[in-house]
Length: 182
Image (cartoon, rainbow, N blue to C red; front, side, top):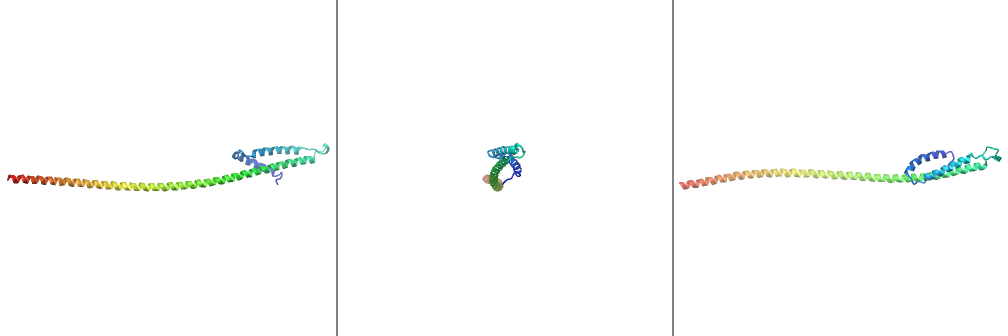
């Protein structure tokens, strides 16, 4: 059980936590619990200021005054326990969320790595295919040049043959006319 001497430390820790939690969980019951604790703290301050001594002559608190102080402190302790329970629930939700975020992060990292690997593999395949196509184009260009050279050689051979045939035809025609004249 909490004592009055640990309550200010707990309150300080709660206030520090609340500034963060209030931003994280706007629907949290924490602000209402803190408002109730503030009312209980004010009730404690009022109860501890009471001095109803015997017959009003003494400045010492009466038994009823002390009981009111104890009741006020017990209310504060009870409220602190409720606040701690809410903080524990919030911490548990935060841990669950953190675990889910970690799982999601891991999944996204794995997916990203897989995508990078797949992209790298596909890029490598495309580069290989491009090299193959360039090699085929080079071979086709080389074959086209070879065929063009062969065609040129064939056309030159044909021109020489045609010239020989024409020369032989002229020589035959010349012989034919020479023999006829003679």
